[in-house]
Length: 98
Image (tube, rainbow, N blue to C red; front, side):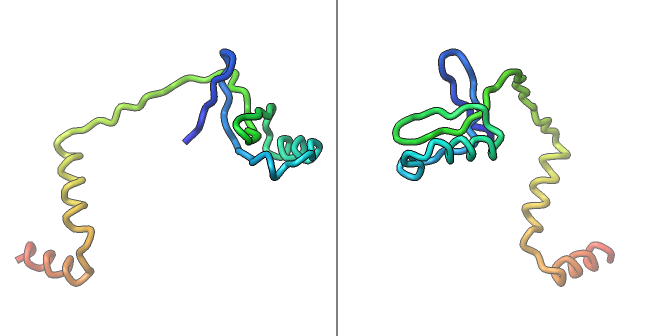
C-alpha cells in the first residue's frame, strides 16, 4: 500500500521514515540515503526525516469486484474444503462416484 503525504498542495509518496537521532548531523549521509532510495525530497516532521518522491501524475483507479452467485458459491465451497486432508477428499470423491 502506498502512503501519500500532502504538503502545500503537492502530493508525495512516503518511501521511508528515519528517526532524527539516527542521522544526527550527518546531512551528507542523509542525502546519500535519499539518492539510494531514489527519492527527490526529504521532509522533516515530528523528530523524523521522511524520504519521499513527489507525485507528478497519478490516476486513482477503483476496481469494483464483481460478485455473482457462482463466485460466491466457489468461495463458500473453498472455505468448506480447506481443512480436508487428501484422505478426506478421496473418500468424498469415492462416495460421490458411487
